[in-house]
Image (cartoon, rainbow, N blue to C red):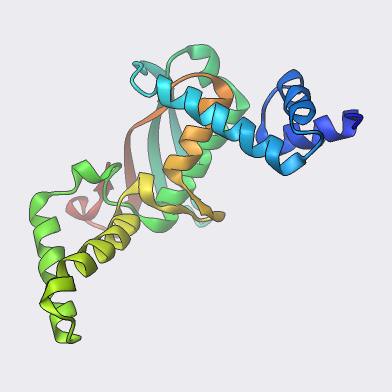
Length: 205
């Protein structure tokens, strides 16, 4: 079938991929928009996975202030080059991540950073809960692991569903942006400040 400029434009808007790759994907899948989009996403994510180990020594410090000026976030978002750090897409990602931190108050960036004492405490809570519900001993551990995944979603930034679109996590958003910009991107650290909280209560990634 004939591939039109409008079809290429629509696929670009869905995937963020360049026009030539979009046109080639549409040709490959005989104009099937969904198959072409899935193919381009998988191709981009595969490329992104190869970039994850590369050093990220550039980036920005992004400042987000909530509308009432009583809540603020400082976020360090890193990339490989100053060129990417200045792009609108990179800065939009930084703002979305800071917005997430402001609203959902994650405790750390990745699950490896969760203190072991907190993990053990949560596992004990979930074990007692499962037993109190009358769950058999042989399935309790499986139930605990399932509930721990939910626990990580609540406190780990990279695993939190994005507040504007809960079909993707913050980690997914970063991976997708890596695929689109062609550079590794990582969260360096963050700090969340709210009027009235003590210094000890302030959350920092």
